[in-house]
Length: 130
Image (tube, rainbow, N blue to C red; front, top):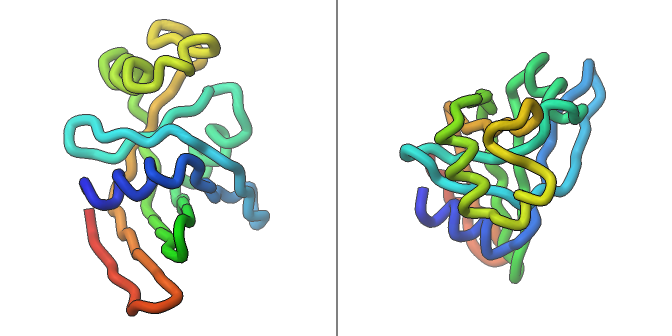
């Protein structure tokens, strides 16, 4: 978990892929944190992304830095607990201008059944399960 999270954070931006029917949807994200031993992301309940994940929780993220990239796949499970949302917002205070752990919009989701693969132009892929 530590290696995966550190790489994601070092990239600054990662791309989250969801599906809408049979259409892939990809968008940039920046929040990724560990909470209770799981990898969490954050979004708003009013966003298309959240509705897509409710319909189909299978998702992937991809990020790239210095000739290495990470593809992580799994299911994103919503966690509407106040303490999980507060942890995310406390670790990412810039989000507090848009979100609050007590509003009706903020949602955090954690990855389940995770497989993360590190790739490089010069090395063999390395896969880890979280």
